[in-house]
Length: 186
Image (cartoon, rainbow, N blue to C red; front, side, top):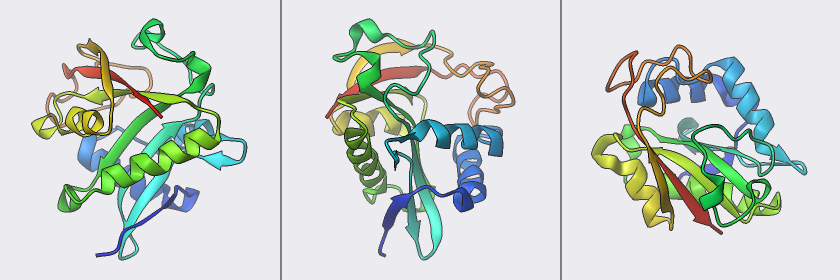
């Protein structure tokens, strides 16, 4: 099974939206949100968004905002970050289809985004990882990549403006899942 890691293209949007909503919950992604994410991923002609493809099927994706191009919100703790916010990319989302998890695809996607972020001038990245992911795999995966916990944020995805129609796969409409704010230095 050969995995191709390549930049996200607009022609991938429907497949990425379907995979994201299947894994994270209905309403997680839509065309408008993905277009915005794609714009925030570009800097100096380089995109930090990637997809994983096996047999011409998208089986994973990594969405990453370029350093200095994403808005900080109340869930960010920049005083605890090792670099200024304009030197930190934002790892928005890493998603791998259940059928191919545990094969290193998430790590390959993260590494591709890190290399792109470095070319864009980032020195590190921050992410809010879903603590309630199956077996807390999101935090475990990011920790194994070198990520350090900065702060835990309860109810991070409860009625957020960036996901107004989100239905959590665990909690439904009233999401009580926590986010672990983590930092990764390159």
